[in-house]
Image 1 (cartoon, rainbow, N blue to C red):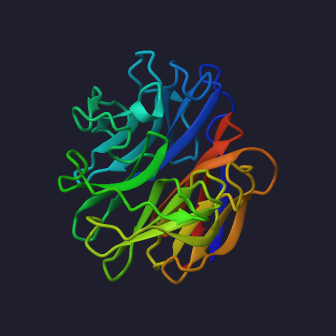
Image 2 (image 1 turned 90 degrees about the vertical axis):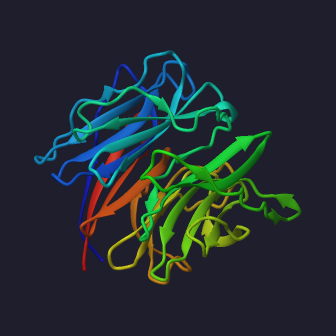
Image 3 (image 1 turned 135 degrees about the vertical axis):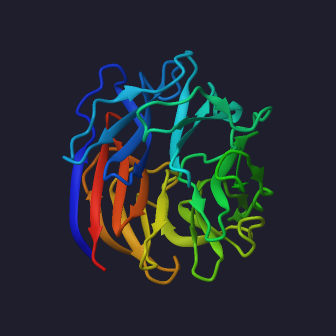
Length: 324
């Protein structure tokens, strides 16, 4: 199943941003890897910025550097995406409070060395949720790009999917997913993670505040979604992420804890051979105590690339080569 696994710390210490969280990872065609995250004095502080580092062909990470606006407004949840033309987009949230987030983006034409000036993704929108909210976008086989989105307004956590037909520049939001109940109370759901089945159906797993991962399915390329339903996958009301590999397996990285606002350890990697119906744990990247959270996972050339928060002080990177 796993041929080889390597674990690295992207940096040992960042004195300018001692607290970090919410990483994103993108392997490049030249063998390099980009990773980004937000960092500052503490989450939500006005000095929090987006930081980026690049892993070269010798497996060395560059010193973290800020690519933010420097406007003393909190930055959150970067998400990297490579367009068909080779340009790289970095989406992020901007604002003091989550319900008032504005989604912005910057573009690089040189594999992340330089970036354009920030632009607002959906002018006039202040819902806090447009574009990808935490996890990576999904390019469907028909060319449509889906962004896993959610909003946290009026104490309601509601997911939806943002849809782009021009490779990530303009977006049309799907209707909000229906709100399920569990034991008589509405379930709060945010931060979807997506995959496409061989038959063209699209699926998402969702973070919840009810002790379990929820799932929803779409049969029309993400335009509409079934009411989310509870799975047997535990969730501690923290971020999850999944990816489908070239063999059709779904890989899920998460904290296997079934308590709302529960501990964020251990961190586990599991896979599914039946399109996400059942998952089997295959690796525990972090078996110890501490906060190991908000993982990001993607796949390229039968290799998994993973990043996650390590005790709010560092970002960890894993490169996992898979057997065929």
